[in-house]
Image 1: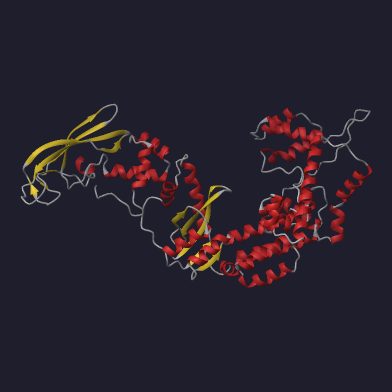
Image 2 (image 1 turned 180 degrees about the vertical axis):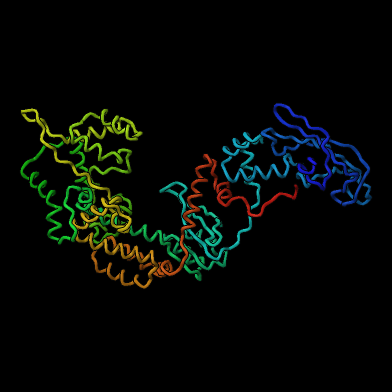
Length: 567
């Protein structure tokens, strides 16, 4: 029977009529039960007082909204001691008291409200035939009771950005069940401590290496085993390599100098210096013999470099005189982070010239363009049409900008109208790109990157030693060789490489957690995945992301929540 499929059997509903219009489907129903129970005294009554109609919404049918028209009878209560004189029959297996929607429609709305944003959910439901406003979906999310939080045995702790670089929160994940336990409005030590004290029983905590998390976890769960996240260890190591290369502009230029001869054996310090610095020395000799006129842009750039160098020297001078970093920051009106970077650096860092940030669509066609340019084709439109035939889908402007930069490198024509071949300008690699050469495993490098790595190592013997230390630490973390940690720290301490020494000092301060990271299987990988999901939800909410609503969306639809049974 159709009635048995559409509605619960126990309430004995009967379909009296079905009215279909262009806008909706109306199903007229009434109950065939002879009696009804009083909701207060539970006594059955068959004496009818009157009737009225309820019009709840139900699941859509073939893309059309469905409205139920239920004939509700009102009965007399014949129990003399009951306070109710009359009562209306209820259909609690189908919808709640005074509800405007059936349980199954409400359940559908709740799940869609949790899975997508309110605006998107309202549009999806309108296509299905269930008309509901975005605000109604938001109210549903807020009215659903949360699941009871069970204290996890293994907890992952990490931060997430409310507004990147300005405000952050904390996410807590059960690493055994891969479920978000809670999200906190900030990442302060006090908030972490309070949550852990309110949820005793956490045995293992995998955390970020931030000082606030270290202090919060130590105070809130002093008996828990702390694990420093291995991904963050490797990230901090790469940042140390970037700090090292920031003082090595010769290495950045050597990585980009493809014309240099690749040597199979490592060069000595004197040879490396003579090979790689020769171009710089020659440029210096030319500048001493002649004083070329500077353009306005070059003059402004030189003035900026001079001011930066003066501030760098002044910071070091004040530090030698006994001023603390905080006092220098206050007097110089500089950020504490910049002062710290200045004090850790051996020389003033300048951004390398000509470094391009990010990838370009032209990268795949760079070799072809250079070949055609050297062959004498300097027409940007023609070059653009040629690479379009090879699959290039970018604009002509990209090729035109590239050709304009190349055209500036062409020498002026001599008296006979011929141009001499122009030496190509070497654009240094960015610090981040060069750092990946030292961090990646040799098996993961392609042939061009291997040649670039050899050039970088030949340019500076300290970078060669740093490369060996970095690769040793990477292997130690990947293979979880905890017994090699102390010897590695001792080697770094005697290396004289300031950036790696600073990284090693941080490892020493968090020694117990780092050792646990190299000996236990837990990590923050699952937590990072939940952070990625959190970011997706935050971007879905179209500015409606108040913290209470956002928290409910991240925690997800309550586990085990279901409507009263109906079939």
